[in-house]
Amino acid sequence: MQNILLLFARFGSHITFIILTVISFLLIVNYNKTQQSIFINSSNYYANKLDAKTSKWQSYISLQEVNDSLAAHNSTLMEKFINIQSPAPAHSDTSLQYEVMPSKVVRSTFNLRNNHMTLNIGSEADVEKDMGVISENGILGIVREVSEHYSHVISVLNSQARISCTVKPYAYPGNLIWKDLDHNFMHLESIPKHVNIAVGDTIITNGFSTIFPANIVVGMIASFKVEPGSSNYNIKVKLANDIPNTKVAYIIRNNFSEEQKELEKVENE
Image (cartoon, rainbow, N blue to C red; front, side, top):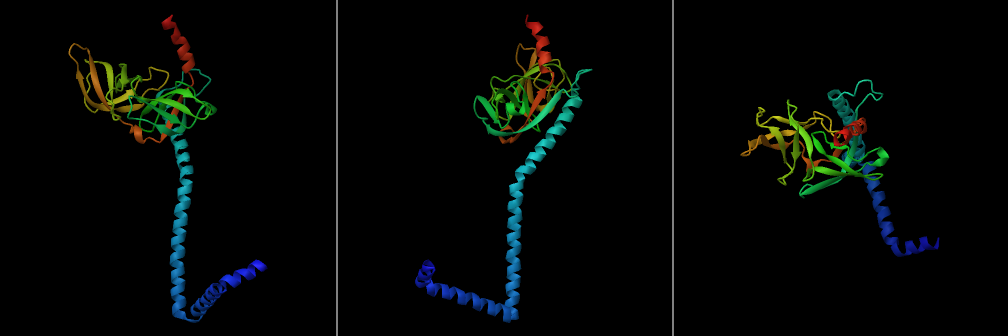
């Protein structure tokens, strides 16, 4: 009570002024139709603006949830497409050879000699080493290390990366490598020069490894040449992916990779 009295003693004139101003405003609005109309119209205008701002803010807050839902939906569609292109082995207990898991790119480099990515899912989501990583537009890299909640990915923009690809519709195996330090282009080697290719032809994965399924689009032929004394093309590939701007990645699990690897060990014995 004493504090209230002290407050009035110190700011009494200000408080009295504010109270009288509010009373005067209410009297003017209530007993003058013109001022009342102006007040109502102004109130509605600013109330609508506030509602619009609130709605925009709520939409922004829910955007993350919408993006997660879209990523999950896209992963389901990708999974169906990939498995249609690469049916599971006959009489297998698992109906799908490939599973697709959505994730977010939390870190990525693209201007180094050996570039990497970090994704926000790991062993807790059953991610394992040597799984392929793609986006909606093409390939991104290969999982190399996994922690509980994160995955470390060697980007295709890495001097050590070797991706088995071919020129559509052929099946000749070639190696996709990165050597120009340009994130828009890679090179496809080992395609024999007797193959009839042209600028604009599509480059796809050939499914010869256990990492990437077949028919994942990589890019298109930007140019090609045959070096003197070589029997193969040197093909410059314009990537379909804009890797520096990729925010959503999809990790591919091959449910039969271990079986295939175990069998292929015979080749090295």
